[in-house]
Amino acid sequence: MAVSLKEKGYKNVVVFEKSIRVGGKCYDIDYRKTPQAQGADFLEANYFNEDNLIPFLQKYGLDDLVQVPPTDIWATNSASDPGSRLSRAQFTLLAASKLTNSTSTEVNTGFLLRSITEYIKIHKEMFGLYEGDLMQRPTPEVMHRVRGTILDFLKRENLLGMLPIFQTTQTVAGYGHLDETAALYGLIWHNPRLILAMSLAALKEDRAPFSLFSLKNGFEYVWKTLVEKEQIDVRFKTDIVRIKRKQNSLYLETWQDFRAKTEVCNFLVWTPEVSELLRALENPTKEEEDLLGSLTPKIYYAHLIDVEGGIRHSPTTAFMANVLSKEEYAVTWTADTAGLLTPGIKTTDGLAKYNNATGMRTLYALHAPSKHYTSEAFLKRKMRDHLEKGFNVTHVEFLNTIAWPYFPRWTPEQVVEGRHWDVFQMQGRNKMWYAGVSASFDSVRSVVSYNNRLLKQMVPGSLNKHTYDTNKYQGFSHLFMDLQRKANGQTNCQYSCTVGGGCKVQYRGYTLGSCAPNGGACIGTPKYCQDCDKAIKCTFY
Image (cartoon, rainbow, N blue to C red):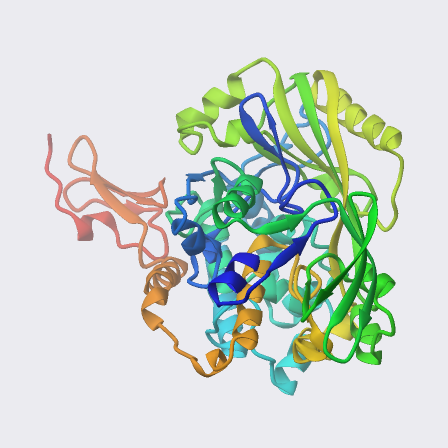
């Protein structure tokens, strides 16, 4: 935001930073020659959008991306339990099988693909194609359609096939349980580009930009470099204790490096969690109290730990029994950042090499979000017990623990009133702009997109420049149509000859049908494929 304001011609742009570093939840600890994440970690297809992060980073040569595999799954809290160790694809298809009552990979894959294509069509039907992360204010009819929780919406729209995707991209990520979180939050986060990227990644058919990425040097490095290159004026160790709005200016009573100082500014862009704003703001308006004061965050605890021993299962692993249990502080996820950044980690051989390796690993480990703070001693004991008792870790050393106020949210009843857009209508009034996660969604992608939307409000005349480049959606459209064909079984049928002049048909890599030589009988041909003797001619060899 500060860089963009300077580019737009604003003078004397100052950043007041409470801590001793820039980046907020983009927090990395340089350790063992790796930017060990303690906050933001991944990027996906939306980050390539024109209004988002990667095009911005490309201008500075900071777009050093590594394509990474999706999170794999431990279904139970024990590595020794049969069936606990699942790839993302196995987890997704197993969940589909519970809805189809079929063990057929073909049936469950088709069901999943049809659910994905139907979800994307419904999303586009309700919101259309739109710039940025936050869609235009929906009509009353659409608001009624998205009432209630995410689970309510999926049930009403006959989209329960999307459950395993939402469980891994919504709940694992700390964005709430599907039967508690407002449907609109799920629809904002799970736009078609994210759904397509994560679905293709789960099925191991992803390709850039519809894939999952990490920054080679970490997120925090990006912000530190931008501050240095653009010579942004950052006042570290500044605590804003009081904000007073006068006729033409804002007066900020601050403590800067342990000294009291009053700053005067023309307007203020507030990016921290808004409960801090309301504590500092003198005489907030009724709108500010009603809209911002009703947002409630959870507390998300993250550790950085060294572990020795243990059974490996992909660089990033979710513990789904804990993720879905609703137990506060349960261990939900671990990530080995060095493992993610290893060349070839997305290949079968690269992943096998990682899983078979031994020696110390440094893990980014998360607990389930909670309503309250708790002691580090309790959290460390819980983490150690989980890893040692269930996954054969022999030693755990804690290097850092941090508590993030996370994903401030409204209730489903409040969201459906249109509070996202009510806040947007307040923007710029009384010399105040509300940016950051409270006004949008708790992700880098959403904050960057929302900031760019605010900048259009700040710069005279820019709101009238509503250009819409449909060409940049061609890649999405191509993949979406390909996905639709797959859902209808129009691709993935591969035919080959067998010894003796017969033939076989493979569907998505599985041999499911064959024909005997010389016009003999055909058996097992998948529903959406031809008998192989009609597709190819085979002779005895």
